[in-house]
Amino acid sequence: MPRSRREVAVAQLSQMQRYLGEEMYEDYQEGLMTRREMLRRVLGICGGAAAAAALLAACGDARGAATPLPAPTNGATAPTTAPTANPTPATSSAPTSHPAATSQPAPNSSAPLAVAADDPAVRAEEVRIPGDAPLSSYLARPSAAGSYPGVVVIHENRGLTDHIRDVARRVAKAGYIAIAPDLASRAGGTAKLGSQIQAFFANAKPDELVADLNAAVAFLDQQPDIMSGKHGVVGFCFGGAYTLRLAAANPTIAAAVCYYGVTPDPASQMAATNAAILGQYGGNDQRVNSTIPALERAMESAGKTYEKRVYDGANHAFNNDTGPNYNQDAAAAAWKDTLAWFEKYLKA
Image (cartoon, rainbow, N blue to C red; front, side, top):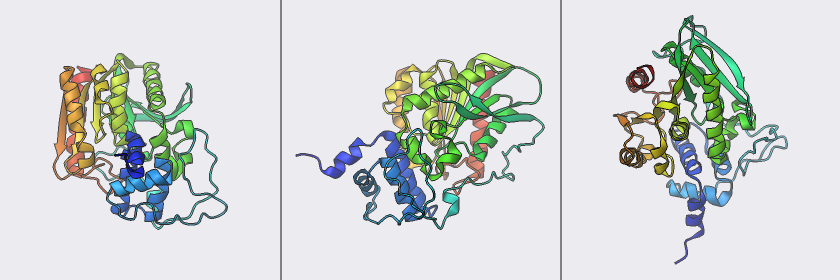
């Protein structure tokens, strides 16, 4: 029997389209954005109404994409396809009742792990990495003279936010040279894309994003005081998934820490990694956790080093101290294990 139109549409979505579309729906369910805003983003992520309706139905949403989109204002058009690498800026869009859903929250300076931008132990700056597509990035290093391993910090699906800059400073304060690239640079950068950023990441070519991450690794190698030969990577959510992809693609990655990132499809690509991989997961994050067994099998069958930590009671994005799922105890325990992992596989 032939498959229905709905089943075909879901099957044709990429892993990242499904992952980010489901995440937008979860954010809507948790009250982080209006239904209108969720529909806008899911349409952009899926690239069309039929696929968006199928994805929403698969999420258990009986209304699918039947709710009409709000009429755009000032001549702007509602996004129905993903932004291109050089998008035309929209003039404006209909406002939502949840501004925080489309803006970058301020860093939580009271969070125990936070490292202030003016912390004297760290020197940080905005840099631009040359390459096929110039890559805006944030570079942080210890202020003290010395030789340090390099670590790539990969952001969530919100892009290079001030929270991720804070994470890069945390890495630097722990004794590493950290680079946090803006993987939205091919489309003008995080700030330019705004609420269309998830659509860009959902439809970006994985090979191009991995090439950008490799450019960041090469940039680390050019830094004074860098310990060359092996590097680390840590990433969160979307960045957790690309932590695994980079660890599989770059032989100089010796240690990788994936925070609640889905296992790449196919998982067999992980057999190529030289990295010791640590997975950090929230106990309540079943959507991501359902992909852990595939990673475990791939790493075990290839004889690679892999360990996981699952924090009971923690949700997806538990490390982000600017978000609603922040879990201070889980974040502190995971960060302690992250630094111990880097100490063992990068500094030893």
